[in-house]
Amino acid sequence: MSTTSLPPTSRSSGRPRMRRVTRVVRDIDVWSVFKVGVIFHLVLFVVALVAVTLLWSVANSTGTIDNVENFFESFGWESFSFDGSALFGNFVAFGLLAAILGTALWVVGAVMFNLITELVGGVRVTVLEEEVVLSSPQD
Image (cartoon, rainbow, N blue to C red; front, side, top):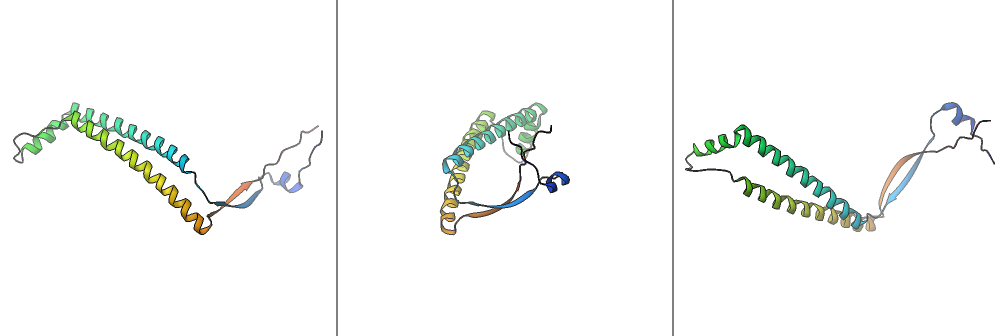
């Protein structure tokens, strides 16, 4: 069993040593962007759907919907009422369309990034890496 000794500077300082490393991002996998985009936008759609349903329920139970309908009727409309099921159906259709368009926008953005990085050689990113030092067992 061989043991490695640590340099005295890293043992006495107690802080991990850092080194600056430059990486170049040249390609983003479009299929991965599509999968992440679909999941992200569908989760966002479900959260918005639950939030709108809860807000509608609270507004309906507190009488806010009736107050808004009466407010519009005071402007001369003979009968004004919100149809909750029609609004919900339209919100679902709009939300699904927005999820599809948002995902498509992400995919087009990834394709554009890949095309541009082929022209310019990539995006250079400088990161700090910690050196991992394995400690040897003490006798």
